[in-house]
Length: 150
Image: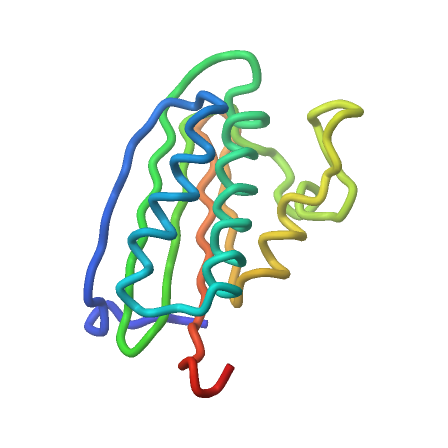
């Protein structure tokens, strides 16, 4: 899915520290911003879940045992589409395809390895770019259905 820049109607960019407490902030901020498109509760839940997974991946895998910046940009497109970009400047990944496999994790036995799979299932588009030592950028897109169609 490709969203056209000319159809962009609004945008917000937030930069916050990779502290676990900020995952909830990112979820709430994304949900509050997309509210202007009048999404259903299910659509809000889907987006909040995907944002949670992306931000948690940046915290747990991108920075591991250190703190660093996470940048989240939310773009709204006419008539009702959302693009969310979550970027960290952490350790990056050598093999994005491997990292996207269900059950693969570098986070130890307490991690499920389902983050990218969950993002993919709740959003209409998912792109992951990463470079070792330079960080990871996750771009997610979702087309919102009009309430009468849901």
